Each structure stands twice: as C-alpha cells, then as structure tokens.
Image (cartoon, protein in one colour):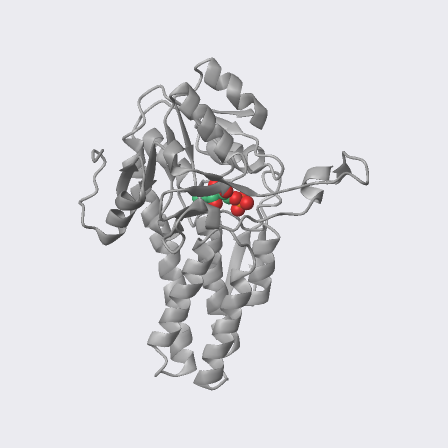
Length: 353
Ligand code: MRU
C-alpha cells in the first residue's frame, strides 16, 4: 500500500486518519488541498510531508502555467510559503520546498510549461530518492540488530511516514528480511495514537511480531530487561545532534540512559537543520486540545479542562547512542561528527565509532 503517488497530474494520499480500519485515498488537485492534507494529518511523518510538499509545488506550477515567467515564479514562492506553514517542526517540509524553488529558478529561462515539467520530475525524484535513502538507512541500521532482539519504538517512522520502507521501521524491515527473528514493542503514542493505529498495522502486515503498550508502560519494560534497544525517527536534528521527535521520545532516552540500553535515531540527511545550533531553537508544534480531551468523538474530560498539547520534544545529543543515516552511523553525535557527515571529510562506515 503506497503512502502517496502522482497520477494524471494529481497527488493521491493514503488517508492515515482512517487507518487501520479503512484504506482510502484523498486526491489533491491544487497546493491548497496539499497544505490542508498536511495540517489535517491525512499525511504525516517528516519525510512523507516533505515529499508531499514537493508534489504540492508541482501542483502550484501546473495551475500557473499561463502566467508570465515572473508571475509564475512569484506564485511558486507563495505556494512554498503556504506549504511550509502547514506544520512547523519537521524540517523536511522546508527542505523539499527549497529544493523545488531552486529547480524553478535554475530553469527560469525556459517556458512555464517546460519549468512545470522539470518541477514534476523533481517531485518524482524526491519521492524515489526517499525510498532509496530509507533502504540505505535500513542496511546500516540492521547491522546493529541481532537475532532475537526486541526493539521498542514510538510513533510511526515506517513506510507510512515516508515515500516507502520507513526510517526506524525500515531498519526493522531490513533486519527481518535478512532473516533475523526480531520482535517489537510499539508505544501507543498518545494523543494521536500513531503507534496504536499505524505502527501495529504496518508491522503486522509485514508479519513482524508487534505488541502494543501504553506509553507509561515503557519504564517497566526497561526494569524487566524486556527490550534490547530503542529505535525512533526524527523530525529535525540540530547541528549539535539534538533531536526533535514525537512527544515522549525524550523520556524514553532518559530511561535508556538509566538502564544502559542503546537509544538510536534513524533519519535521512534531509532531517538535519544545520542552521540551528541546538534543539532549543527547534520550533515545537502545539496541536489542538481536542486531541487530548477527546478519544475518537467521545469527550473524556470536563468542558473547562485546560490542556497543553506539544506534539514533539527535544532529546539532547548526549542521550543518543547513535544517529543512523543513509551515509552510515554517527555514534555519540556532536557538532564535529555531524559537520564531518555533511562535509564528507570522513568516510562514514557502520563500524566508525
Ligand atoms: O505528528 P507526526 O505523526 O507527523 O510525527 C511523526 C514523528 O514524530 C516521526 O517519528 C518522525 O516524523 C519521523 S518519520 C520517519
């Protein structure tokens, strides 16, 4: 089941709000619909919303082909500004929009229809690159997994959160395909329940044993030595290695440090934001109080309950055993190692410790 695909000039998005009970695609014909789909969580997960935004830019280009080149490029910029505002934390959104705008500029001497073709091709390239990158993350990360390992994960960093294969779950898929017998504990991920609704569904479809726990059960699992490692995804990684990911990631990192269990982040290079010195600078999305006061359509609190609903938290680099990227594994990430990863001054390999 594909998270998203482009067909006959329109973007088709698997409606993740309806999973696991219904598999329905929403069709976006313009970039406003794409912005709405990202805001409404029809599509979610950092790499997936980046790819979706790229297609949103292609749709904006299609709509403005009859304009002058100057107006076309202005309309593209405005579409990018709108898409970027859909969700603030995952940097992949800005990364994809910037890449699409650069393609627009690079071909600005051509006709608007030719630039549009280039932009559609670029969105397709971003989507297929994402799958390749995730497979590379999977190959590097799978080397950290032994036969019989039990892995704890939070939220959904699987195929549904990307154009395919996934990041954290991609590592699990690769290890499973390589023949290792592994099992997974999935935290339910209150309040939006990505773990309960999406991760359990994805892993079950792949025949990987998965057990759902409430988020608060994680501590007991550590105490009873029921897990061998944590692998989660990321929404933005600062230059010093601090990571923004789904709310609840930071407490898991504290538990893993306390219990001496490896804590791994799986993320593509497009999730790094080297403009930000530390995680303190990463904007944290706050979502509607209704996500907490209601379960499905049922209100579980009094009418006047005050609610704070941050959707992400920051895990400091010092709590992270390694960040697994398509370029290899960065153990105990810090400014220097991340700068080296990007400058490629060091040959990154899976045994570089
Ligand atoms: O609010 P969401 O569902 O978009 O949050 C998703 C996460 O926090 C994921 O862990 C992250 O985006 C990485 S997905 C490969």
